[in-house]
Image (cartoon, rainbow, N blue to C red):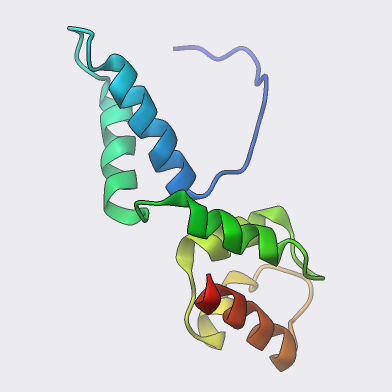
Length: 115
């Protein structure tokens, strides 16, 4: 398949991807044609690594976006990974041009734990 241009782009958590792929799977269940290799692999990955309900990751992402020094990409990554320690959070922020204070790390971890 050749893609000529991107019409729309949206960041999704892995749980949201899983829900979307489940809908695609249900729509294509009636078809006699087998699912493509890439689609099957994506579904398998989402089944293995995504939580069953996307509401919790969406809630975490939305709360994180209200914080300073938080981009949509990082908020989505944190919601997917759900880091439990400050070291894991620092690893996510390793590419950024700034560092987070201990208080900022604690606030992020609190949001993840509550979520």
